[in-house]
Image (tube, rainbow, N blue to C red; front, side):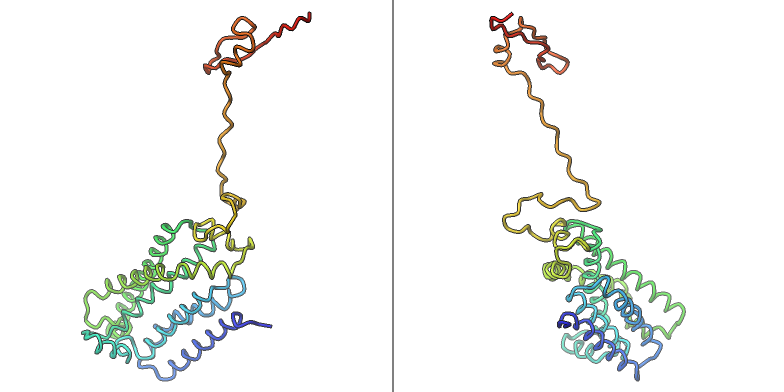
Length: 288
C-alpha cells in the first residue's frame, strides 16, 4: 500500500499543476506568462520522467514546488504588478515592488539544494568546503545564464520585454538579481544542509546503488556509528586506498652482535646501508 511519502510528490505535482492552469486563464500579459512559466513547463516533465530512477528528497520536492509557485504568480500578474509585492512595498516603505527580488532570491535558495543533492549522490565532490563553494558557483552560473536570457529578450522584443525584465527603472537590477541569488544559495546551505543530509541518508539507505549513508560518511557529512572504528568501511569504487608504508627492517643490535661471537666469528662488516649483516655464524658447542 502506498505511503504518504510515496503519494506526496503526486500531491505537490497536482497542486502546482492546478495553480499553473489557474494562472493561465487570464494573465496580465500572455507573452510574459509564457516566458515566466517556461521553467515550470520544462522541469516538471523531467522530474516526472526521472522520479523512479532518481527520486528526490522531500525537502527538495517542497522547495521546487515553492519556486514553481513563485514563477507562476509572477507570470499571472507580471513581477512588477504582483499584489503581494505591493503589500511588501507599503510595509517596508520601498520605492519599488520587491517581488522580482523574491524571485531571484528563490533562484539561489532552491537550486542550491538541487545542486547539492546531485553532487553528493553522483560523488562529484567530497568535503563541506568544496561542496559549499561549487554549489554557490552553480547557482551563480544559473543566475548569469538567466540574465543573458533576459538580455536577449530585451533585444528581441524591445519595449515588449519590460514586463518580463521587471527592472522598474533600476540600473543595477542585474547586479541585485545575482547578489540575491548568491544570498539565497548561501542561506539555503547554512540552514538546511543537516536536514538534507538526514533525508539523503533515509532516502538512499545503506545500499551501494547511490552510496547511501556510507557516501555521506565518506564525504564527511555524517559521523560514524558508535563503536565503529575508523577505516572499517571498504574503499568506494574509484577511490584509492592509502598505501601503508612497508615494515621497517630491523638492524643488528649490539647484544645480538656480541651473542653471535663478535667480529671474529664470521660476521661481515657494515653493508652499503650502514647496518651490519650476518653472512655466516658458527656456534661452537663441542660437536665436530
